[in-house]
Length: 182
Image (cartoon, rainbow, N blue to C red; front, side, top):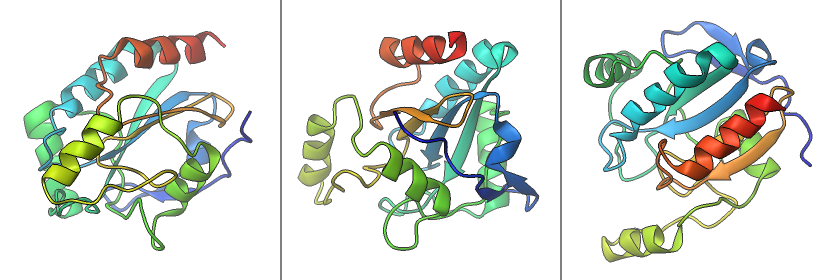
């Protein structure tokens, strides 16, 4: 069992200060996002998850990052507009920041440290990346855009899902349901 995440300071994409502490008591799905990725349509599924479970204490938190093939080139205002116009995404978006490497934001350092391996099909996705001339990251690093971390109400990291785990995936829904019932 992991320890609860520390009270990490965050910055919303509009520049407002926020903190992980503001979400204690909720089940969270923390996702690194990108606007120009083949997985970008997952925004619609993430918004559907948020609307389905919000009344039960669930929230999606989106963290744009430009770490993977330059697939998040916009600034924070452009990213927010893209998410609103294309996906009517109402879940909180945070300031664009790195989720891998030596300059990764503290939240993602804590997340990858808490759960070093992801569930879901990573092998075929890694092969797709290689076939496109890209070198996939190995665990514990974030593999690609749209990796998902499920956080319990008390701040413990419960699970980590591969980028190819769609928001509609039965295993993800089951994990969210279980966390909400705990």
